[in-house]
Amino acid sequence: MVLKAYKYRLYPTKEQAELIERHFGCCRFVWNYFLSLRKETWDKEKKHLSFYEIKKLLPELKKQNPWLKEVNSQSLQEVVIELERSYQRFFKGICNFPLFKKKKKSQSFSIPQHFRIESDRVYLPKFKTGIKFKKHREFTGLPKRLYITRTPSGKYFLLVVCETEINVLPENKYIAGVDLGIKNFVTIARVNKDNTLIKTEKVPHPKTLQKYEKRIKRLQRQLSRKQKGSKNRQKARIKLAKIWEKAKNVKYDYLHKLSSRLINENQVICLEDLNIKGMIKNRKLSKNIWDSAWYEFIRQLRYKAMWYGRKIATIPLFYPSSKTCSNCGWIFSDMDLSVREWECPCCGAKHDRDINASINVVKVGMEQPEFMPVEETTRVFSMRRQVVPVKQEAMHGISIP
Image (tube, rainbow, N blue to C red):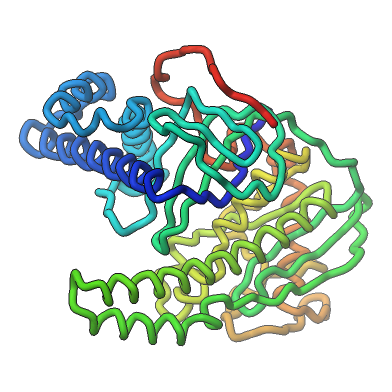
């Protein structure tokens, strides 16, 4: 079983939007309050407040601030759980230290229980009437929880997280080596199970940021000239947010289509283990690397491989795939990034830098222990179960249309 999230555009009424904003504000307040408390406790006493200590403080916080009772209590409990999860991920070195939440950034809250979906409306605790949403496709499986989100441009979305079975695709005999790049987004080498090279392909870079960069800069200049707190500044901020949102949607659409094609066409996909954080430190390449969204592309490949029964193999970090001759194994150690084509002095083979790298990725990837099914701990929504669950009451009121 896997978790899949289905995203729908939400169209609340004015009263419903006000209550949604109240949920955002209360959840943001609880997050910032307990994050500040944990930081102050550590600074003064060098003591980490545990999840259980924080959880016991939530009822008292609601007594001190009665307006917190106007929203769903389980949504506030989820905030405490999510804060603990963020701390645990920080301690494990997976992500940075938790940050305070800001009002004008993306907002969200979760509903773990007591929701109902009927046709094109969703019924939530504290909401007297159903909220309309655009059901452009059906979801499959049992809904486990909901998320309500708002983008900086002011659009509301509903995320339905469903538990569904793995839909294994028919097995095929093809193995792909994927070399990530800047000039070309990916270079793909496909071989069959007999290690016979079938074809190579260079997929052009979408260069999404370059397409919208001039408009973004112009709107940023306009925003900087507006008086803080004015309505004109708010209008300018929304215009800028819409352009950023458009650029992100175009980029993610490209990544989803490419990752889905690779999953459908190949049984095994071999990838490089890139040190993206280290590469971004190069000022000349950092903007192009950021625009490439390599991490997101690899993430999509991994969870889609889990969904559809494919396999992912990762070659070791810092393996010189571009500098190694795919014909004889000789290493051109002095080759810099400007060299796009080269000839092996050992065997005389002529290489295109990116195609040669993708062929090496296939060869080395097939020798890795990851040549096994992807672990089912990878989730599309990064949705491990809570550290301590909320009250385990029956999931009343969940219906599938």
